[in-house]
Length: 279
Image (cartoon, rainbow, N blue to C red; front, side, top):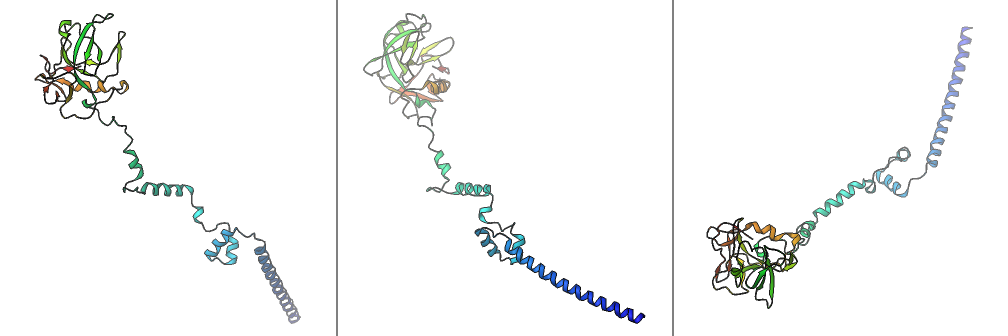
């Protein structure tokens, strides 16, 4: 009985093993069919991505599992990196002279006339007061008619009544600054300014060198640039330069130590005031 039972059991186990093998074979076939079906159903990537996979030489099955992370291309780089590269290349590009373009364009922006701020921007001439009277509406002002060799007289209003007697003003040869913008002083237009050595207590008209004639140009030694045709009040050129116009210890009128002079004739001087402001 035991032998017969054992034989029966072995036969059933053999049959089940055979059935299991058949089932496994069927399952393998189904799995293979499912794989092939899945490959057919996966949508093809864009043309560019196909090229990328081709370049990467991926196997077919691997491609189906990794098509969501394609190989990055030049177009997939961050835009910020491209902009940074372009900016870097632009900064390094030299112009014809071998320097960056931005640097070259910067050197020619300063308007003419603003590159210097010195006494050469002021226009001084020798003139003669041919007529003088007191201002009708201001007790401290003189109104002068001045010949500067221009073919007409200029009107000059000066606050010298308290310092210079009127008889000393008449026919006085002096130095005038002639490129200030004309301005009204108590209703009368003043077209120039008589130059004086000045302290709070005393004012003296500057004297041109002996031998000067009407219309002679007065310059500071070493400053030969052409003066402005007319000073702009907004730029405050006169106000900026005035502190550096003084008489020296020899009473010579000067700008930062450079004497004011008429070429070939001598220096402009004050009668008695040394080391004082000129205005």
